Length: 226
Image 1 (cartoon, rainbow, N blue to C red):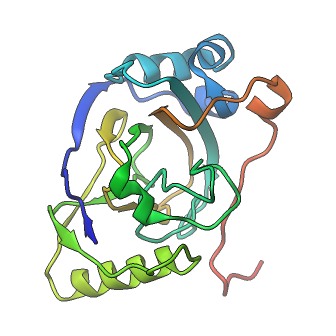
Image 2 (image 1 turned 180 degrees about the vertical axis):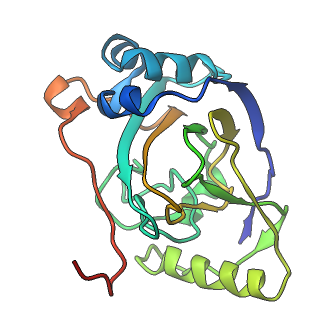
């Protein structure tokens, strides 16, 4: 299957580097509507959305924000080369807790993803090459991204692929064929990440108890000891 097939990384506007105090006191949002994100997300979220080149061509706009207290050599996201928005299960909703069906993407129109990350110690990394041919499972499988990650890392080690890092405080736009990964932090820092998804399938949540995050996920290396 061909990835990075459209090879579209459009850069939008930028925001000023926010203070650590502002990031720390910003509310996290989970699958919020655009209206709720603007209403409850705070000044940092509003500024980040304002930097994005939203197309308003899809039925729904969904906003997710995460605020992480970074620790060096630890990653605040699941590390591994992947794509966003893969259809899952019979509903093809990417938020469904079912097997990823990458083959369904061939017959569907991609969502539009917008990302902005603050700071300089933990910025998302993207593959910087078009038309990447990778093997994928014949049927929906949990092995999908394990297979993709292994093949991309092998190509990187051989020098067959290159990468670039998303600029800090800068909006970037792409679709569901583009390969990217989270990375371990390099220093102590509060980080704000926002992803806005324009989608015809995924819908925003409506209950504020589900939308406003009261906790953040954290990830550690397996051999870490306190």
